[in-house]
Amino acid sequence: MANQNYAQQIRKVTEQLRDPFRFRMFVTLVALGVTYFAIYIPLNGRIEATKRKLKQEEALTALSEEVAFLRVQMESFEHRLVKDSDANEWFEYVLNGVGALPALQLVNLDTKDERKVGLYRAFGLQLEVTGEMKDLDALLNWLETNDRLFRIDQIKLTPDRKDPTRRFMQLDLLGLKG
Image 1 (tube, rainbow, N blue to C red):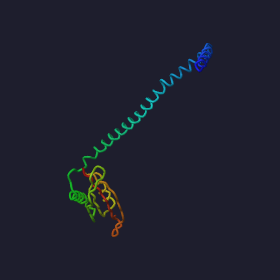
Image 2: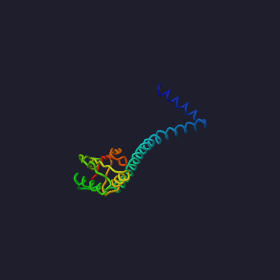
Image 3: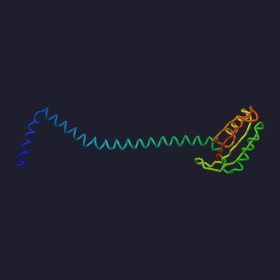
Image 4: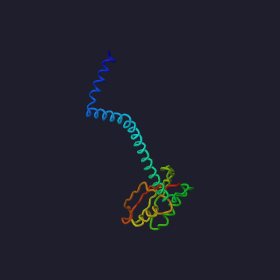
């Protein structure tokens, strides 16, 4: 009985498909269905996977460019990193640098513990000097341009109590070594 109803329904559908307009609509719907399920869905998954992979590759490219930029930056100051040195040698180096500026008066120079700063080791120094502004500027210029790489962690500038034309400067320095 079910087979008979099924056969009757197929006959009705085939009779309706004899109309050219309905036959065209049926063929169009079947073609769209096949296109959607057999072509679009599988390719859409591949397209999404390719988009994810492209984003990952773009991120890797950006990271690679940043590493190259950082390497170029590092090459610009790497010659200023001293490989074999200790706290005493850094102490003497700064002492000689301050001594080369005769108008400055050294008040105090202390070493601090060695510590890690990023990929490098650093010696800490606390420097206290008095002098006129132009001489203090000369000291800061020497710290920026000498053969070694220094970082000023803290700077404190106050008027000298004894002489109003002079200033007291306290510097916390880090001397980076390779």
